[in-house]
Image 1 (cartoon, rainbow, N blue to C red):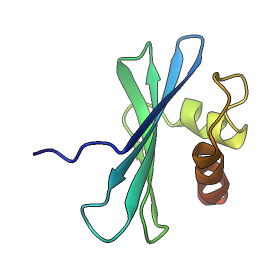
Image 2 (image 1 turned 60 degrees about the vertical axis):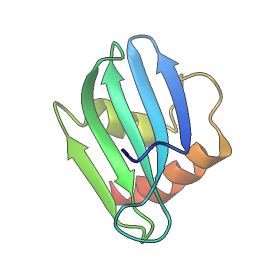
Image 3 (image 1 turned 90 degrees about the vertical axis):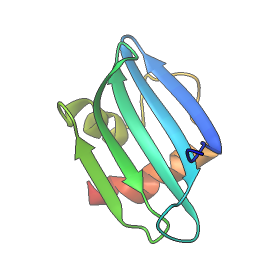
Length: 97
């Protein structure tokens, strides 16, 4: 069976959608956290994965600009209000992107 998300959150700003998803890690003990940007909810531009060992992968599918800007600005303008987990995620990844 596919690794199902433990947590799924969605934030919107116009045509931009940012998904925050938490999975049990397949590579070690703990959780993988993913912040993914999509345009119109269907086309992924990029995503950032934070692994349990605090390594970060920034995977670019089309462009990193929208996701990078959103993270640097604490998802300003996105709604609903950010969860505590998303705020913690941003605090951890912002200095490394």
